Length: 275
Image (cartoon, rainbow, N blue to C red):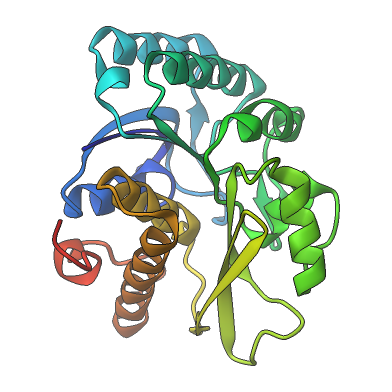
């Protein structure tokens, strides 16, 4: 059970691979983590140090992944924050090649582009690469509600709008769309929803909205979905387990009064079922 995870890495806090790798390992999955950026922290702080990596360096690391035979061994390929159009292009070429070498590989694309707080926070051109190159290759896509609307070019704030937006991205039922952090017109007060749209069907999973908003919850959830899919779980069951694990982490973070997600007790807080 191997997941190749291509995302950012931070020194402080939990976003990108710094949010996803340990939870996947806690679920018993081996992770090959490829960084796209090395940053001091996520951009919601007043300052941020570090840099997006050179596209040639990321491409070279991906070549090393190929040379070690990890593509053939992997069950899931996960991508998140890509940092630059050059990196995104290199990743798109890597994904397409990996799928040729391993037809059973599940590609989970987390199209990290922005949120309701900051708007679009990635470089110009990345949205187009996600929409035109990466999403069409994906088996599963995990945007937040803002990113879903950005990709689809339409609002997704009620059931009809949500299905229209999801259908605009998915063709022939692929990819399955998992949208995080959703509030629809009929979402009960005090709750937030994670919504799965696949093959014209809509599954809504509501959890209490806690009075905290640590960054990286989408990265955590995508990592847990990837881990459960790597273990052979169907997408809906993987999502339900991932939502449960993410909510447990948020509960612990609230109890601790922490600004960043409390991931240290992952084995007890996230792992939901053996195997």
